[in-house]
Image 1 (cartoon, helix red, strand yellow):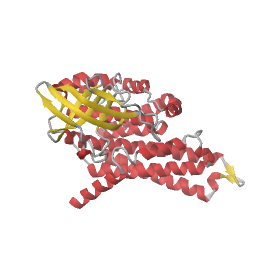
Image 2 (image 1 turned 45 degrees about the vertical axis):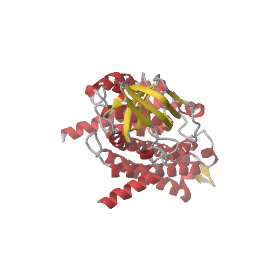
Image 3 (image 1 turned 45 degrees about the horizontal axis):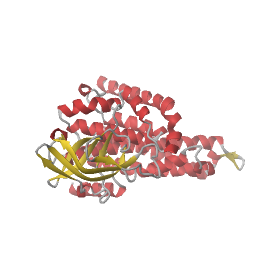
Image 4 (image 1 turned 30 degrees about the horizontal axis):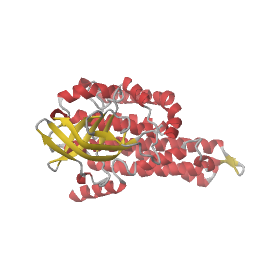
Length: 377
């Protein structure tokens, strides 16, 4: 019982630490980076200094030694102020750092973890491809083994942090088996495209990764040859939880905004909050936020380095992504013309929320996975 209290206290301290950081450092810069479509790398380094990049990394490797629940707390709180920055953080902390740590050799940990845990180097992960999208098993990037290393050819697209990243985790087919490699930016034969312009999550950036006879040493194999699918699937679960938590943060912000606005604004001789139509938007949004919170954190408690819950993480991401978009849409409607304009930022949160119905697994992919898992039972 004492251990449970200690864990609860630790998580509450983490939440208050992140919340204060968000209030003083994240919120003031959020609109500017959405408007300029730039990722705030210096802010990421501030998170590194607080030990928040390595939340899921063991203390023995320089991390904080916490769990999936702690990761959700950070993503939830960051997304409350700046979903785009939270997405860039997710791509760095989960798609690169957490993923690498789970599969890396001691040499790779020594080479890449200190620099990426501090934020001195930005990391990214290359999985999605132009021709196959969600069908990751159909990827066409190839790796060929030579005596002195591997040669990678192919393209990846929609890669978050691609324009800024110093190092990449990349999936390619080696003898038709998906394999993971670590590729520093200065590797011969590697380049990136111009930034891809997008609808939302503009405070994170993305581009294509281009491999043209890209040569890496044998030591850059991550895990085992053909072991990439295991690395990928294991990391997808915590990624989906991070995205579910981001959806929760978006929805909490939009709910708070519409409640505050409905109290302050009067129409037809009474506060907006006294109109039944507005009460419906607020009441249903609150119920969705509470359902999102319960589902995300309950599933997070079942996921860890040796614990899998694909069904739960698919369900959390599926439900939370759509619920967040619905709450953001309700906030725009409650605020009316003000909601459609930039001042209250709910239009931005609506744009940002849409990404979570696509990235990290489309709604359709989650529906397929859940049905397949349930019918196997």
